Length: 574
Image (cartoon, rainbow, N blue to C red; front, side, top):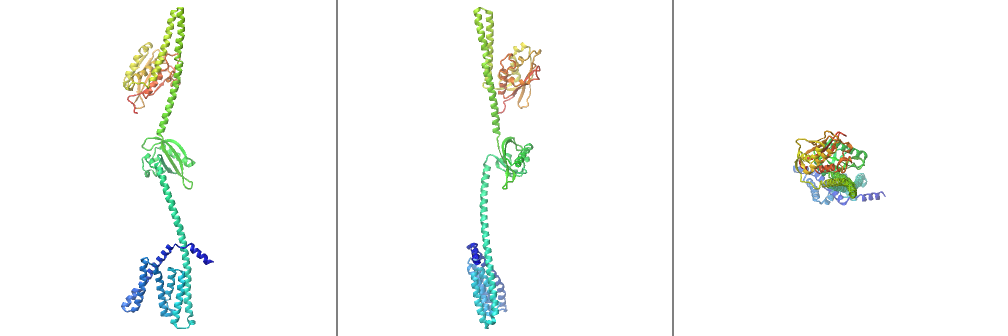
């Protein structure tokens, strides 16, 4: 039972044929090498002793006869023919033992060669061959020994028992050791096979991992986004080429650095705070923020930051991806500006529609009413009243004409402009004052034009309209000022390339909540005042077409009013 189980174990764990062959080949070569070295140690002294007369020639011939087969076997094993050596080595030991048995009988010390022969058969062949060799040794040695002694078996029995017991014990020990060695080798083979499988599997997994990493790296490098990762201390541990280009540094220069070394302090602090929030909350965040590498322009980016998690689920840092949205943000701002402008134009259009339906209808109602009165007066012959009716009709038509002219003028601004040129602003102001000379003299208004006003770049006729409307508006709202005065001047603007001009009066003044309303179309702060409510809207439109801006300031009622506007001295870039 145990033997069958042992056989099954050996069969299950048997070495591969090529491995067993390699083992025996190495064993044969090693044993023959050791035997050759040992024989060489004996050969040299014996040959020298024979030459010196200490040994006879027969001793040298015997040792040389032993050397030749050993050397031949070793030479063949070096050439790959190891099998002859596996038989030659134990056979040689057996022959030496046989020589001793024939020479000295049972008591010879040459029995050690029998032991070596049995050992070599066990090592180089197998256990079965070893038992056959043991049987052969016992038969040959005991037979030759008894014949050589010529004494009864009873007297030689102790020597026979000793010899037989010794070799049998050796054979049993060798058989057991051989089986243990074979089993150990088989187990080693199983372990080796398992390790080979594990190594092959690990190599396959590593290759798959390398391939996956290569694909991932290729994907990350081909994406148009900036991608990076940091450790828990905020040090960069990875950055793709696009991010390196954004920062203006190589990847090896970025690794190990923090945001404090790459960005302005206020941005670095914000980035670090965002990273801390992501790591503490374990949540992904998405936001729009400013980005500015040191020494470069600031721009806007869309950012996504997520926690960096290892295989055990532990957060080891942050992973970030961002892309430039400056153009989209600018487009959105322009869109919002256009929407606001469109809303303003829609409101203006609504007011325009109201004016068409109300302000233009009012003169028509006046005309129609006085035409009826005129007809009635003509029938009754009241010529004086007819003259007054006709005067009122004429005033209504004149008011309608002026309103239509100003609306037409307003619609033309931005569509029909004269070629811009460099003009002295002082000349523009004087031309506008000349056009209003009669009105100014009628109200006894003194106008002061500051000397040395700078040159501006724009449409001469439209800029004259600006001054004309602002001065006319100032005259209109002088109130009961006994010494009406208007001043036209300028001062340096905070914006390079532009000048701030102003038209200041000492009239009735303006409350702050009217600052924006005065520039609205048809917005008349006093319905009884003269004018159409288009003049200041026209001023605003002309200044905006010249890439400037206009605003009003006043200390309050009876404190006078100052209208400011900006103009460029040369064409603005872009």
